[in-house]
Length: 388
Ligand code: GDP
Ligand code: CO
Image (cartoon, rainbow, N blue to C red; front, side):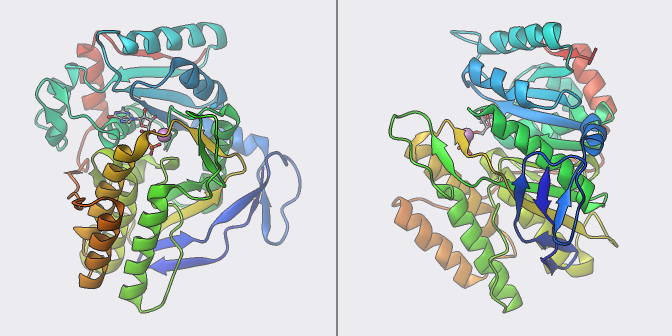
């Protein structure tokens, strides 16, 4: 792979955010890097892939799409499917388990499949810092919750990095590119606290025949604008550095993942930025910045493949906007002007829409091995297929 070298950056306290870099060639193994350009060799990819678990959250998506996603994740990385799919009237999770089994039997790749609503989480998470994730018979619903369970599994199994890839990606080629961008980012950032966030060049939905390729998602366009306004007002220097506010496709080290707080549901992606900026920039040395004295480094990379996924209608979009902007509204990044801009934006989108305060989980101090082994011991419906 050949990428523009990450060079231009802005620093906010101990958070370094690189300006967007583009993928220049999908395959440029064993070619020389030169000024402004970096190439990453297959040996590097293979090495990092073996240390990375790719977490795929899924909730009632089509099975053929999931199959395409798994087929595109490099063989060396463990796939962790965290499902919140329905069990009745049709047991969709059973189908996901069966699919994983068939894939493992044919390809011998490593796959872990677990369900977010498994009752085995109750004992595993009780009396831990993540007890707040429990509700009723199991873990609360939400994408952020599912992602965090995946992180715990990856940590327990000894992985150094995790990357997230949505299960509703219709284009396997895009998934393959995302994974390789993660590996490239970890290699280039050379830090224990890396984060890689992907911006797709175009996005489209497949549900209807009139496919339209948008340059930016309807939610990320808004989240990016408000985050940039907030940063500009704090520093009194205008910036448009944030280009991946809602990046579902992102990756980070397990060490970083377990030392930051997480937000529930769809607030998860913007909250990572909000949390790091609050703790490592606004609060200066007085916050909980995990990386000190080092920087958290955030690489934003633009993929070549368009992001074609299942788009889920206006109600879904509106609720995502309210949750995304809620992470900023209820943070110390927002002054009165930013709060007013958030309210105006929500009003424009849908009358009566209000910023939603994020529900926050703090995994710090958790013992992943203990939680995960307790979970696996009590679960009847999770399965770990090891590679080979
Ligand atoms: P969008 O692409 O940002 O509009 O959001 P999606 O609705 O496509 O969700 C992103 C991914 O998260 C998809 O793969 C969903 O199947 C998955 N997902 C959504 N909600 C949940 C949840 O509550 N738990 C889990 N484990 N996955 C979820
Ligand atoms: Co989607």
